[in-house]
Length: 297
Image (cartoon, rainbow, N blue to C red; front, side, top):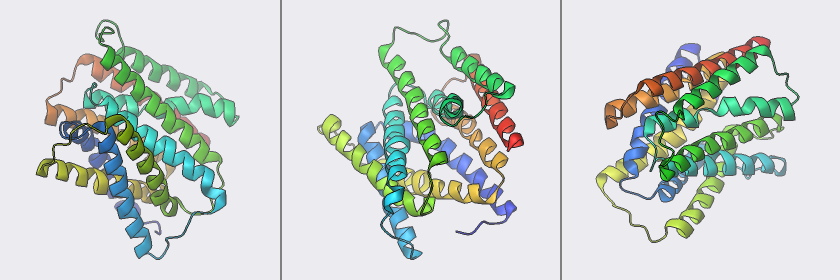
C-alpha cells in the first residue's frame, strides 16, 4: 500500500467525500427496510469480510500482535460498534443532513481531551475554534427552532453527539498507541470485533423486528458494506499516507457538507437558515483548529 501521486490521492479524497456524503441519505432510506442495529451489524460484517479477503490476497493476513490488542479493542468498540450503532439508531429520529453535521463535530471534542490527556496547549486559535463550533451546535439546538418536547428527536440528537465523542476518544487513543502492525492489517479484525458486538446487541434489542428483504435493501447493504465501509476506510488510510495532514483534515470537513446537500436533493429535506448557520459555524470552528494545529506541526 505504497503512497500514490498527489493527483491520484486528491481524486481518491474527493471520491471519499462524495461516497461518504451520499451515504447519509442512503442510510436513512435503508432504515425503511431494516432495523438500525441489524443494518449497522450487516454493514460492518460485510465490509470486514471484504477487507479480510483483500488483506489475504496481499499475503498480509496475520493474527494481531498482543501489543496491538488495546487499539484493536478501542477502534472496534468505540469507532465502529459505538459510532455506527448510535448514528444508525439516531437516523430513525433525526434528518440525515442534521445527523451528518452532529456526527462530524468530533474534532471539537478531541481538543479538550488533548489538553487534559496529552498535555497539548490551549492556544488562542483552538479556543476560538472551540467557541465557533459550540456556537454552531447552540444554533442547531436553538429553542426557537428545536422542539424540546419531542423526546425521540432529543434523544437522537444527543446520541449523535455521543457518537462523535466516542470517535474522539478513539482518536486520542490512536495518537498515543505504539502500533506494531499497520492500520490496514488491523482494520479487518477491528471490523470483526465491531460487527460481532453490533450483531449481539441487535439480537438482544431487535431480534423480533422484521426485515423487508428486497433488491433495494440488497443494493443499500452492498453500498454500505463494500463502498462506504471497506473501500472508504481503505481509501482514507491511503490518502492519509499520500497527502499532507492539512489536505486530509480539511477534506473530512467536506463530508457533512456533502451529506447536507445530498440529503436535500435525495430526501427533499429542508435546508433552513438554522442549518446553514450551524453548519457554517461548526465547519469554521473545526477548520480553525485544524489549520492552527497543522501550522504548529
